[in-house]
Amino acid sequence: MTNPNVNMATIEDCARQSHAGTIDFGTVVTRLAAAGVESYHVDYRAGRSTYYTADGQVCTFELSLAEPAIAREFDGIAVQAAVRGAQEGAVKYPEFVRRTRAAGCVGYDVWIDGKRVVYHGRRGEQQVEWFPGATEGRANVEVVKQVYAAFTRRDLAAALALFAPEVQIDQSTEVPWGGHYEGQTGLQQCFARLMQALDSTLALERFIDAGEHVVALGRTRGTERAHGRRYDVPIAHVWQVRDGLVRRVHYFIDNPTMLAALG
Image (tube, rainbow, N blue to C red; front, side):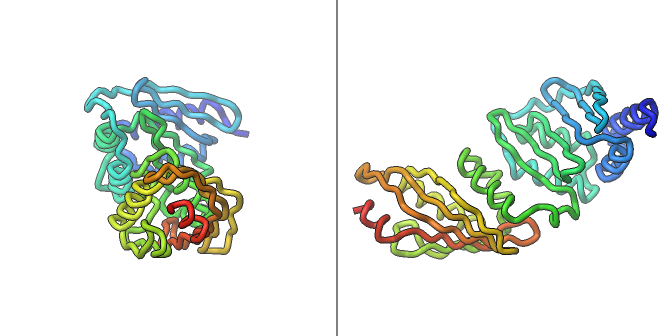
């Protein structure tokens, strides 16, 4: 039987050392898990961290956070860079806090059993970062769903963080935004061309898990911008995901139906 007082002492010690930058994240997580902590939330705006244990205990500690002011815009790439620095041991916690606040992060949730951390922006933006070595638990279908969710809320930084730097994108050249694109710059060009042509919404109906490939089936609906014509077209997107990142995407669309809508 666990001793709640010992657990609380462990949590308090982890919080104190973490905020002082004298203990690394891996050690914190290992000790908290042994103390029965399921998750914890760090709130930069309120200046506190709250820990939740599996047996219902809640433990809150005040934080001394003032500088810099939390930026208005959320920069998921800057948050990711701070996370990578912390994982490599180059960025201690006080500096990590400064960097993530400057990147517009208002706080984050650490899910110990889920092996991930979710960073939050002012407008509901999210940046999901997995524990080192936890990519085997990051289902490829879940990665693809996170990409769609990021694009739906127009959070380009969060979406880009899920693509490998060398990603390749293909779509039929019959449609105006089609072609072959490479890298994250190519990805941005592809979606810029798509957004210029269409005001679209995806209605995804099914995900097929085929190992490192994921097939998303559904429909794209909306209005083409040139003439205001409505469309409702079947789509199939084939994703290749490896080590938690998208490596390649083939976007397939019902070309005759789409071209008819484009006029």
